[in-house]
Length: 574
Image (cartoon, rainbow, N blue to C red; front, side, top):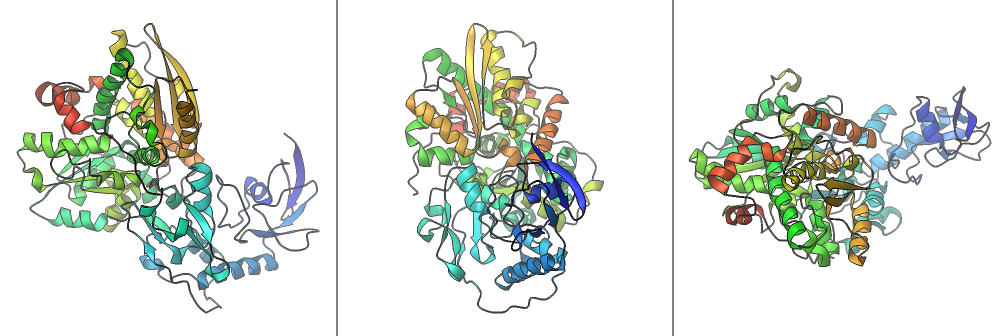
């Protein structure tokens, strides 16, 4: 790699020739504030908060886009630099709502943090402020353009990472806003509700729709039996909302916290992840053996389901008919569990804790009422649960480790890896391989399907059959793969698609910020949960076996077809 020598604040450093001044400063431990810059998105130098002095330059330069060169001299903290940064931030604050204490992003807002770091105690400018209506008519996200600082991050993540192009700049000058086409609401346009825009937004301009108050009310109602399920990826991320390091495994403490919040039963979505493998794996075997539509594509990610319904409705028959683990769980809670516990399902409130904002929209789909009720009543993101724990005054770090309730809290290592990209594929292969071959696998670690690359391929030998698989994360990568399927170029048997970078570990409802390093730490933790599990194959889950033996019958049977499967259809939002 070609290197250059530069001087930053009197310190001589050697950095890659391709680096920007901001990247060079970061490499040597010098912090330059920024707002529009995000390490995983293309830089534009729009906000000018990251300005620095470069010897020979005509004025201050935006360090996030200014390239280094041999012999460059940079100064990052001169009076001129500090005053320029303060001016930019004061101008942003002058057109920003002064409701920090009641904002969902309070104490986790980049604008707030930079204003504090710059020592801004008084805003010198006063004048007209934006007056935009709030977009909150969809089930998942709330957009408040009054809090938008026009950084463009949401535009870039939606176009470059997800390939959806929902957002763009509109109007000019003071009237500039970031909006969907024709200033429509997200419920009217082709938005998948993946929530990646919310994870990169530096302020409270885009946040998840907060359902915590409804859950508090349910917990306070003595006539309601409130149960909760927790998704695999939540256990390795929740700690971050409560001051712990990324990748901290907090499963037992999370269970204890949920009991202290007042939930009557605390269950594990991993149970129905295992159940999903039995249903989806059986469906794959049926398609392989009986000439079904291939490749079969997983249907666990609701953002991905929205995407294919919106953009590729002609390929819907490739989707597995198996519901997501969240929705399988909801259906079972108000049927199997209600019957087993002797509780009127009308009195059950079913809550899920998910790393995903699209799960909120999934729960209210008309198809998701196979129990005779809305199967999942409320979906809370990882962030929302963190806020509830804080509101209740629970000292999370001091909680004991507690176990999930049986039987819907019993799960395997295969269920937990659903949280990582490639995890559904690996869990399915562990079961499908043993069913098809009729013998136990020598190794159940399918390392070829692991990793964070956008598209990964593998060929798995199962008996005499070579199964060709693909694993995709992010919707822009899904688009590329679907184009290959549509054109007949792809000859896969089985494909896993996750809407978000890294899968559920990087979901739109996970703690902010979430970067590549964060996702890697969460992934390491989730595979550690798998390795330390007593049982690591879904078909060996004793509670799932009992469910089939005593109540459900068999995978793909009449009862499971009614409760655990669905069909997807074209959405016409434009």
